[in-house]
Amino acid sequence: MKPPYMSLKDFNEQIILTEPDLEVTVTTNRRKRQFKTRPFTAVGRIYNQKGKVMGYPLISTLLTLSKGEQWLYNLIHEKLDYTNNIAFLQVDSLTKSDRPKMSKAFKLLHAKGLIKRVKREMYIVNPDAVINFDNYDEIKRKWDACS
Image (cartoon, rainbow, N blue to C red; front, top):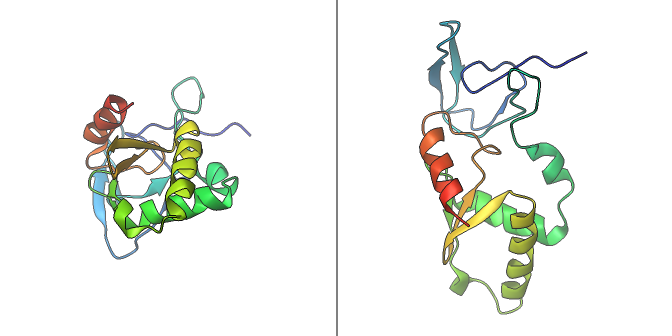
């Protein structure tokens, strides 16, 4: 069965949501329906009109992470500010043995397109992986501006 077409304006039940204590109402332009969703951490596949997957395959990526990558992503996830998908990690709080581990894990996660370094000790998570419906365009511009 071919998956339904989706975009940020027209999404369906394939989106998985976390943080059950927060909710926001999202209205689609096309169908004038209201969906109750949480303002952040929606993951799922987004399809364009031709059926091409436009979103980030977060779940399959998380399942294939090495132990070091899981460790770093967990650190970032704990410090993540969901309003802008940016996490501040203080390198001084890490042990000397954790610093090379963090550097190697960052390179691997960066190669997978999951995170980028904004500046020293400041990381941004791919807005197509962790979708923020309120600030998506702004976060996407920050993501594209980072190297």
